[in-house]
Image (cartoon, rainbow, N blue to C red):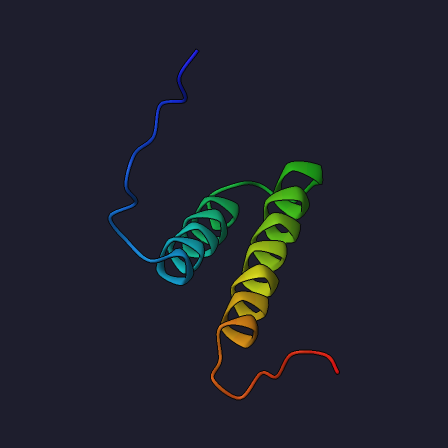
Length: 65
């Protein structure tokens, strides 16, 4: 069985940023409560992932010695 592969059109950091924005926008339209908090937590996780990705791909990062 072959894996289906596809090429991403946007870089990972851009996709993560867009996803965080989408989640925050969805949270703004949701009444206060569990669902809204869940969306905000997810947006924070995605933003943290974007920052980690930025850090990992930065030219100043050195391998462990």
